[in-house]
Image (cartoon, rainbow, N blue to C red):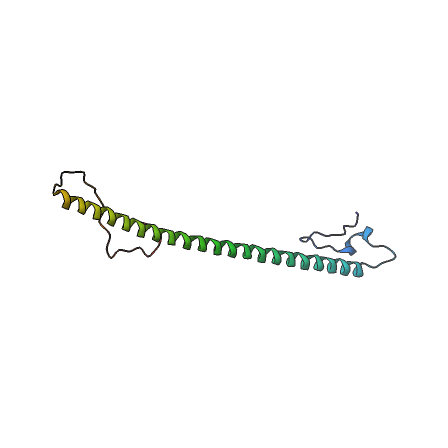
Length: 129
């Protein structure tokens, strides 16, 4: 059986069990120690790569989270601006409507239906109804 330089991590590799792995020039113990050391070095390097990738993933997720929070804050501010503009325009329509009724004293003319302002029910959550 041929010598396998990189043993499977799940199967222990013992040189004294294989006749072809024992040569007259070297003993099995030092070769096994060298393989164990090489495996330990490979594992240490793989662990370091994993930790670097994990940190990079976490940093990316944190950046995305921050960007989403900033975008949400901008949208919530825009909602507030639009609600304020809507209230102003509704007030302007009501003001013009009241002015027409005073001028004509006839309510049969074109009527503008406007939703009354919601007093005391200001939105605090930024999203929803």
